[in-house]
Image 1 (cartoon, protein in one colour):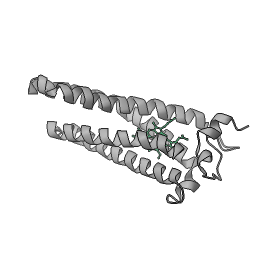
Image 2 (tube, protein in one colour):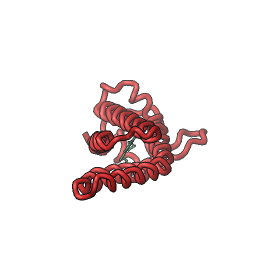
Image 3 (tube, rainbow, N blue to C red):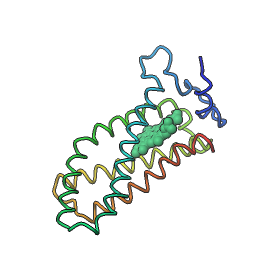
Length: 176
Ligand code: HEM
């Protein structure tokens, strides 16, 4: 049975007709993970990732001018190696759940200009792919020992801007 909550918080509300199962429901007869589990995993992983990025920009960049350069570099190195241990799993959950949810909307996403939901979700996905590109660049440079402070700063600000866009789009796509 379709719950009121499932209807009110999906694209159904916004004139998008989904030939697939509505949010909150796994396709019948398939052993797919329920949509409610996917979105919960997605949300948890998103807030760990977004929280880390916000911490890096709002806290770390903010203290940079009060801390000796070498000490800051050490902190960045330590945070970098911690991030390389934790983030792959967080990103796997975030992108895995995101792609699985997007699969429910595949028919809608095939026509990105036909509805504001499809357009905003498509832009959100493009921004998310760009974030992944930033992360891979940082990890690659870091593991080769080529990640300089100016790279770290640029990546922080760029990913921060992407995050603001992604979170706004994730909510706007359900209401515009
Ligand atoms: C940096 C990466 C990402 C972040 C920070 C992020 C963040 C979010 C947030 C905050 C929501 C709203 C969840 C809610 O209100 O319950 C959301 C929804 C969603 N995301 Fe992502 N996301 C990311 C990547 C992706 C990717 C790669 C895809 C698909 C390829 C995706 C697909 C979706 C879909 C389909 C929804 C709508 C769920 C719904 O309300 O039915 N996301 N995302």
